[in-house]
Length: 365
Image (cartoon, rainbow, N blue to C red; front, side, top):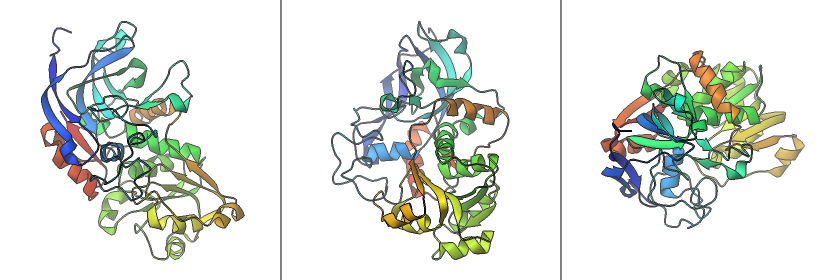
């Protein structure tokens, strides 16, 4: 480790609140790998909603509105992260790392040194890897990649053989494992009609590609200004982000006013409209609620239509390894909406929060 500095540049989260809680530091200690960890020189890190939600404290049950990216008046002290527990500060966020392994702990795989890798963000108890209660998230409960260096368990990295750039590889892990987890929970298969909300975002664009890969009929919902970019992902149909008469819009586009699966990351006031368009025996799956977590549900629709609802957060361990094979075979493609230097992090997150982009924002240390 003789070529590795003792300090580095990093974005450090100092508490729940607005963007002022994210400090650009040039003197942060370079982490040292524990016995089962590797040290990664970070080349690129993708932004995700989890970054914003954790920083603002939106996961707290005290917050009932949609995500804004700003500070909230009330945030619970003990439930400010995805897992319903508190987060300790200071914290370096950033889960979607692409970088090169430069050192390994005594019990880690030294064969990873020198390889370009991406990170599996679900850090598990590897003696009990299927136990969701023991899972922690990289960049949330543990320091992540908005820095020049980071550490993680050697079993949480995957070497990728690809001609894609570092920034492109940094768009995959969070969004695509989240999307694949949703589709797996909802048991999406060939021929299923899958309605995808928020289709222009990181998870939404991943849902289109991964559902297409399964042979599903994808119906993307996005603002008209983004239809041109969304069309490049080859959904079968594109609708407005929230048609006033969703049933009629579906019928006009597809010939049927019903879908088999709703894959939703938006929720909010439009939730009951989505539920009404699921066919009998169909599935609703969610991994987000950017328009608001408190929704209206007519329980009669749920039970009389034999619907199945799925929440999807912690994914099975194989999904990350599956994703690497999809990348290497060229079955999914990245969408880089923009890149920002580490010192321009605030501007990058402001762009991310504005949601005027299609795809992913990436930070380049």
